[in-house]
Structures are given as C-alpha cells and as structure tokens.
Image (cartoon, rainbow, N blue to C red):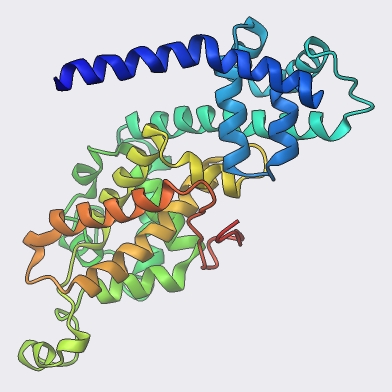
Length: 327
C-alpha cells in the first residue's frame, strides 16, 4: 500500500510539473503582464529566497538559454542577462531593476559553484613539507597562536600545545588537505583574540592555575578540553559538507550581494568554530569520547537553521563585516 501511495504521489507530482505548473505560469503571465522572473524579482527582496526561486525557474525552463544560465561562467553573466531580457521581450531601459536583480542572483548562483570548486581544490591539495609556501603558513599559524613561545624545531612535541596530535602537523592535514590549514590560519590571523581565547579554553583544566580537583568543583565553569587544531580541521570538514551539499546556499545567498568568495567560506568557519566552542561548554561532556555525539548534535542545529531561507549565520567577530541576522 505504501509503495502504491508513493507511486501515486510521484505520478501526480509529474503531472503538476509537466502540465499544470506550466499552464499556471502561462495564465499568470497573461493576467499580470509579467513573466515568472519578473514576478520573482518584484515580489522578493534580495537574498536566498529570491535567488532560490530564480535558480529553480531557470533550471525548470524548457528554453536552453535559460537552462544554461545557471552553468555560465562569471564573465558571461552580463551577456546572458541581456539574452534573457531579449528572449522575454523585456526592454532593459523600461525594466532596469529586473536586469540588475537577475545579474546579482546569477552572480550568486555561478559564484557558489565556483566557490565549491575552489574549496575542493584546496581540500584535494596535500600538505607538502617541501613546499616553502606550505611550511610558511604552518609556521605563521604557530606564531599567531603561541606568540610568546618560540618553536624549538619543525618536528616537535610542542605542536600538541595548539592541538595537533603528533610532533608533525603534516599528518593531521590528510583528511582536509590545505583547506584545514587555510581555515586555521585565517581564524588565527583575522580574529586572533577569539582564536587565542578558544585555544586557551580548549586546554582547560590542563593549563588552569587551579588543580584539576578544584577545577571540577566549579561545575559552572567546567569544560573538558579538546584539541584546538584537530577540532578546527573537523569543523572545516563540517563547513565543507554543508557547502558541497548545497545547504550553505541559504547563508551564502543572504550574505554575499553578488559573487561569493573563499573569504565567505572562511568567515563561516570562524563563526562556527566559535559557536561549537560555546556549544561544547554548554553540553558539558564527561570526556573527549563524546565529541562525535556533540558534533552531530551541533550539525543538526546548524542544518535546521539553514532550512530557513531568511536566515544567515551571522558572524559577530572582527573576522567578518557581515551584519545580516534575520533578513
């Protein structure tokens, strides 16, 4: 019975998409004098809701020019907007705002695809200790997070002080490649005060002036430590998965007026790193073995937020100049 109902639902969905929806579009255009793209831009302010609707409209069109618009290169966006206006017989002089709105949304759509490609390239690039640029980034990370303590050697147990697992951080970058290092360094250099605070808190009670027994008595301040760098790489994987799945589109479309860039990804990482730090303390774990459970709970919360098209994850630190909270 369940299979029958599912098949019936799929059949009626097909009929709606194939016939009824197109009929409704035709009738609505005749009644309003506006095509679907005009209605979307007129009825919705800039942001994810508008861009999602434009993206769906273009992908669902039977016209090849409209279908291919979402796969265009950034350099071709202005030309494609002109082609769409010409195809819809809309004068750009009379409907100047429509052209501007379409262009902004198309830049967001093709820019998001470009951002995924850029992030994926960094993720696939392995850390190379023979590459001077890679080594320089790693040493800058140490200097930013441990400015008062000189590193005794490239291979050193000191790396564990900022949350790496062994004496050579290279091995910890295998999962996320250079992307993990880029994010950690961005956080350490662009929001240094917050990064140092998170690092300090992650080391408690290890580096607390109180004894472990005294620390645990203060249950309101209790926080089981975690490995800062390892958690940063893990949160990098979390943001990466949101980006690749498309879930992060809501946030990106709401905070990037046009072309999103790697900075938007890095700022999102900084924000979620801070939020995970707070979430970890609030969860008050018994030990580090609870990390996966807490991470999954945190991810569910973020994913739920991103299902609201009016929501933007709002960085509130010097790492970002984004000020959108609830559009």
